[in-house]
View 1 (cartoon, one colour):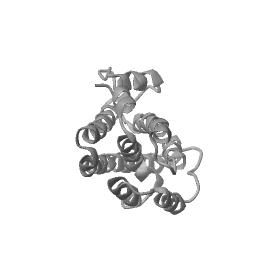
View 2 (cartoon, helix red, strand yellow):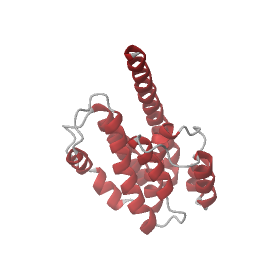
View 3 (cartoon, helix red, strand yellow):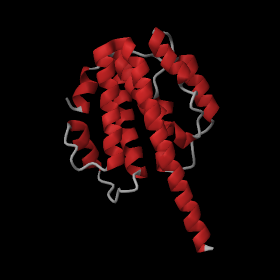
Length: 191
C-alpha cells in the first residue's frame, strides 16, 4: 500500500504518530535534544493531552532557524504547525504535510541528489519508488513502517514506531554531521 493510502486510512493515533515521527527524525536540524519530543510520544501512548509537551518543545527550540537553511525551516514548520488538539480532522493534514516536509528535508540533504524535482516525491508517496535517491527512499520506508505498525498494532505499535524514528534520527544526524564537515573543509580550502 502506498504512503498516500496509508495516511488516508490511518486513525487519529496513527496520524499523530506519523507526523511526530517525521518531526522527530528531523530534529537534529534544529539542534533539539533527543529527549525533547518524548513527552509527546508518552501522550500518544496513554492517550493524554499533548498540548503542554508541544509548548515546551517549541519554547526549548526558541525562534525559527535562519532563513538560508531550508531544511531547518521545513522542520521548524512541522513543529509550529502541530495541532494542540489531536483529532483525526486536525492531525490528518498535519501528518500529510509532515510527510512531504520530511521527504523534502531528506532530498535536500541527500548527497546523491542533483534534482529538486517535487514530482519525484509525489510519485514516491503514491508508490513509484524506483527513481528516489537513497536517503529519500529510506525516509519513505520509515514513514510507511510507522503507519503500518500503528495500523497493525494500535498503541502497542508506538514503541516500535519510536524505534524506527530514533534510527532515522541517527541517520539524519550522521548526514548533517558529514555535510557540516564537508562545508568546513571547503571553507578551509578556500582560505
